[in-house]
Length: 313
Ligand SMILES: [Fe+2]
Ligand SMILES: [Fe+2]
Image (cartoon, rainbow, N blue to C red; front, side, top):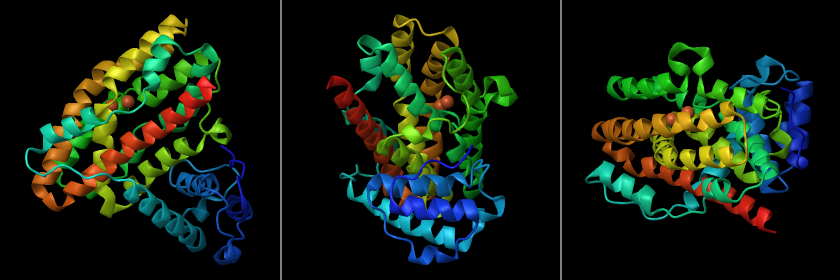
């Protein structure tokens, strides 16, 4: 993948420094012009810790100037996310309260739109946006694994083993998505559609990396995972039916049918075993589990809101 296009003064300065390796002037980099400028910069800085860019030297992954810019953007982003938080439930009876919290959260549904009304073009656009996450599906949770106790770690591994295809590269969830993209006439290359990703997609992906790459936020990462899994099974069924209605290829439909069953299991595992065990061991992390969970729900809402408004216009 090559570096994305810049979206303002900050991304322009940082991306130039990344491409040339001349990072010494970054202390005087201009502030971001817009939230999108800040988020695309943060996204590219995080991407260095995943598969990186062909046009950026690998040693810049730990360049102190770039890490400094990343820290500043992360702090600002974490504050924004925390400011959006509602009241969280009391800590007793965690799993039931958590499932209620997710169920009571009533946001706009893209899956319902795809199920009944979306056009083929709209679904293509949605799939292009979803490549930003699905082509590295589950990777952000992997960052957290070494930071957990044996008991929580084993449960996360059970879930990740499924996401990574149970040892078969053809069954890796990211790979199932690649096949679906290919058969749908879309570009399956990692990062191919980053330049059209709207703010909310960048924010969602950056939240996953923020929680995954900062040990102190491990509970937020697992809370994000739990809310994500707990809101996947039923929408995946609607997505599969909508894709069928529109005549999408079988492989694309299968990506979603696979998630109907897998995520019905994963939500139990993530809420009860993973977050449940984490909070038995470290009850002080309770509110951070909800911080991650709410962020997952709210960022999905914001994206759905944008797309549904755009498509209705
Ligand atoms: Fe998955
Ligand atoms: Fe899953």
